[in-house]
Every structure is written in C-alpha cells, then in structure tokens.
Image (cartoon, rainbow, N blue to C red; front, side, top):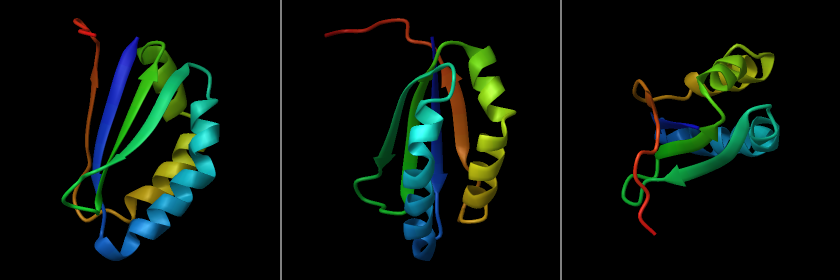
Length: 98
C-alpha cells in the first residue's frame, strides 16, 4: 500500500475552476486500476489550499496513473491554476492506532 499526499495552493480566484475539474474527474481517478481510496481536503484557515489524499496498491500503480492520459489531462488543467508549486510525497503506513 502506498499513500500519496499532494498539497496544492491555488490562486484565490481559481478555486472554483479547480473544484469543477476535480468533481468532473474524481470518479475516474478513483476507478483507475490500483487506486483504493481518494479524498480531497481543504485547509481550515486558507480556503485556497487543498490536499489530495490517495491510497494506491503500490508505486507501480501510482506511476501507471501518472503516465496515463487521464492524469495528463487533469494535471494540465490543474497546474495552470496554482499560486505556488505543489508539494507531493508518497508514504507507507507503519503504525495505526484505533
């Protein structure tokens, strides 16, 4: 299992455009082979900062998504809306407390 977190800061006047694009494609992303979970979070204090949290079967599955036409079309429409460079990282869960 691979956890992927991407923090994105958008131009304030581009937030709605980002949300429209995300809503239009979130089902396709979630249904992509290897994607097990997808969430979109919004910062509590800075309404133009969003984080995607996704779980993938492994790095190979994530890379297949990143090489796909779906990712290329979503990302090309998303990156032009940024106010800052996004921050992305992949992790694995080592401890879970319930």
